[in-house]
Length: 148
Length: 148
DNA sequence: CCACTCTTCTGGAATCAATCAAGTTTGCGC
DNA sequence: GCGCAAACTTGATTGATTCCAGAAGAGTGG
Image (cartoon, rainbow over all chains, first blue to last red):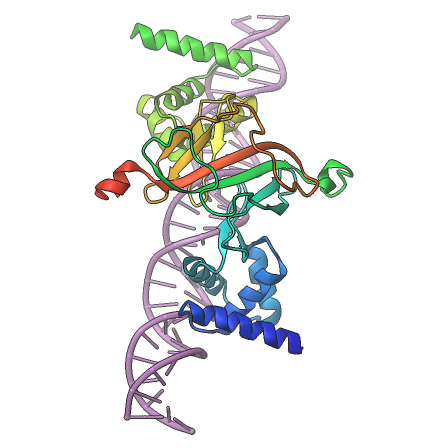
């Protein structure tokens, strides 16, 4: 598992770069986010416990919050769904969400930096980001309708 | 309060138009939504109980769901906040949300019909709506920072 | 290499929005 | 008015998330 080792030390560097201590739960969470682009909290807990059964759910919440505050991960929360996290940050991309199964896919932002849209009337708000959620039906749900 | 009576009968017409029974809780919820453009569930309960103290919270949730299913109100749920409802529907407008106090304001959509944006790569999804949330700081929080 | 300190993690309880279930009331067509 | 189905009341329950107190561990200086 030389590759895993190499990637783990990469995670370590990421953590040290933002002055966060390097702990097993944090490395495991980062690995889970690398392998699953749009992952919800519950799945993070399951994946982390596959390798480290003793990790508490509170640790996961703490880690995710710390990583979010440090800017290493982004939290997305489509209406009516539980929070999801993704490790792709910094390019201001958007998401397309399936109404029936909740699947999420990335959509590149043509502009690439925030805010990529300007409001017609901002009511005096200082807008720094425009978040776009495309709602629709994913290929699986559209064709087969078998997948739930 | 002749005006109130007139508006109440307007609500009554709205309900009948979508085959919903006219009940006091429903009229009270519609009145609350008319007076408060972006209202959360808890505030709806408080406002309705000001006039009808016996109305249960379950009734409010039922009414809001029925009105949403009927298309009379829209549910918006910015990440990290509780659900809010608005009675302005049908014009596909968007919202600007304050990061610090959660205030919401309407932003007109230049296109006016869904979907107003097209994804650069839709991953095979059939997109029917593009929801835009502008994140920023409202005038109160930007200047005084007193209103928190 | 060891001790110290502060951050992080563990385990458990609490909170809050929202939903579910059972029984009662009520709008509205007849 | 009658009766039925929709809607409401009461109360319990779920599920995601947060709070709290004490234990463990990471990083630092000796």
